[in-house]
Length: 317
Ligand SMILES: [Zn+2]
Image (cartoon, rainbow, N blue to C red; front, side, top):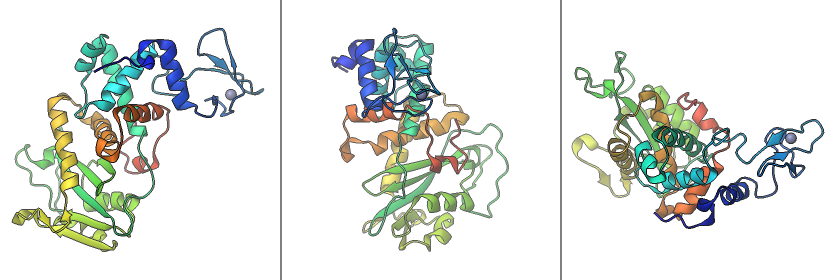
């Protein structure tokens, strides 16, 4: 990894870089929202809002995941770049060694940057007329005290003394064929939950592709088409009907989680899910470079939340 661009070299250059990303049309006071009314203070990078009722100080990190840290801004930018460009993710330990910062600092950077990635997603419905959206679910991790699950709403809970899916947390993925993914870590992948997620995110003019799971039977009828492949009968592709994009996402996610993030607490799982979703949605195939991906993550550093993540109650920070 080469870090010869100016934003990696010094704190001043890193600040200019972040300012240009965050304020392309003039500095915005994060306290009152007034644009271009600020003046510089004696401290480099600190501005005072000129609006009469405000007069508060701010920097380029105020109101972002970088706020109030003593980590140098060029280290932040490097960490953003590293986490955005590594396909399977980067552990705190790797970051600690690569950036020559303490493990504690690296751990902190990882968590904050993951949060920024969660904010860097897109809104608006997925799919549309003639477009395919795949819906699929998988299981990951362990739940220490799993509640007994019923089978009235789906065919999912084949519990085998604590080793089966009842012991794991479901992850539901919606993937636009050749496009973006939205991934949800849910408490239970029952029909009600899955229907809510699908309805809130997918344009009904789309073709919905799923496996034969009864979770999607009812909601499938509200789409232009609902086509399924029968995994239990060994059928994975029929013409252009398949779930390969969603399964590809799950594959990268599980590989990354087992290789890099070995000790993921269940309560943090949704953040890891968001991190992989972010990289998937800005993947090279869609035309994004490593640099653009890092920049998008930095732009997501501001404290905004996406509404579609709030509705399922799984992404509260
Ligand atoms: Zn202000």
